[in-house]
Image (cartoon, rainbow, N blue to C red; front, side, top):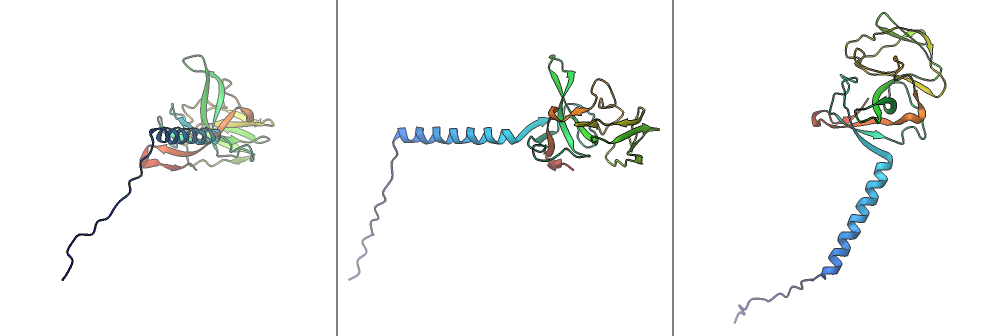
Length: 191
């Protein structure tokens, strides 16, 4: 005769004490905070506030800066950097600006007839908004440990062409803009 009695399976349920759940939550929170602090030593989020970098970057674009980019390497021509200027914001604090490095220490820059010459040669810049660089500067020698920066929207950019900003000293550079987080349709690395 066949035995049709159902098989009984005993399942052990592990119970946790309330104290251990709180300890795990606290441990996870501390680990997350430590990771966040470490990441923020290398990366800084920033928001573009003005139109001086159009068409490369528009107002309200969210970027990530590599704060360690120049700890082991020198800034390079074409890098987009964020730096502390002597300009003041609405609250009287030093204003942070975002610009592109055009001139390196020792470079000779001439701006005339809407064009930029770098070390005696026409400097091609495909990223310019209007394709024109206003102002005039003749055979300007970029000093040691300083960088000549300009926005991509040259007709509205307040940058190294003007006394109010001047050249950027290496110590003033907060970091190199390396990644666009927002808007999502433009997410990715910056050239």
